Image (cartoon, rainbow, N blue to C red; front, side, top):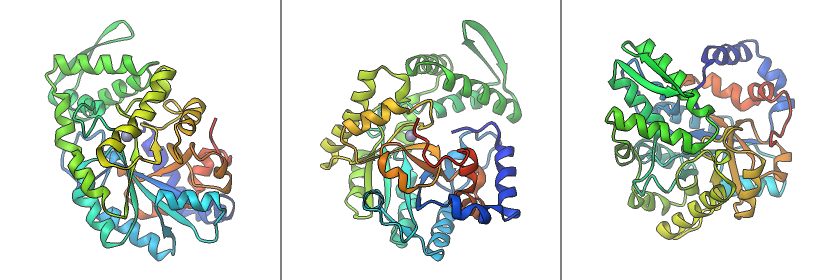
Length: 352
Ligand SMILES: [Zn+2]
């Protein structure tokens, strides 16, 4: 999600692009297809403190990416079609899937008309507590606490800590410190406890993020009727599954599908692990997703798809369209597989 070494990544992407080495690497690392991860799609907002900005791209950028992919003669396919091609070894054309996590209303307002106009199939992974209005978008709550206060107090690892957060650079620094400390906690319950306490003391209404930003079941139902749209599961409470007990992880995955089926009439065949990095989804989750009957499950481990992914369909990598890197040349490098091959040290499958 939040990347502390943004500059490093940008330098790496630029280097791969401008040296042309991504082209040299392509035959080895290009893979057969890719799954893209997006979150918000909306016009850029002003404001110096937007620590979650990497989770949003502009409608213009989305459209540019679609046009570029079509021009490159890449097939834009649904998750079902992606699975079919992997399972049946249909690799003669490269393919890309668009996936959107969390079910934000801006997907319907800004992304859908563009995707519809271009006839692009796409999936939305929905954590059912969001349309149920019980969801906790804790990363936005943390942003709001820091945005609205000049100083915050917090107990971290049994020690009282005080942070000054008057200026935008200070706010960014405090956000990164607290955000990554939370992400490093050993249990999801511990993380939620800290965020509940912060929201209580600094009077942030966490429920409001859900109703302001996320689609209702009616809105999701309307989208789901369009043949271009796949609704996927994303658990109930958007928990980092690896940080909850076994039974809870299992029920988050099965209940997520059952609630969507009850609300929309179709059981989702595809799952995305919330957060999706190795600290939130590992071998146990990949097995549980298979046992729960999902046809595919996606992580946010960076990578393109290889024929070998046929044997680990519940541990698929994705490529994030990061709001901090809204340049077509970055997307070209990412889709070449060169950047992620370096990240994965040229291992094609990373499912351990
Ligand atoms: Zn998510």
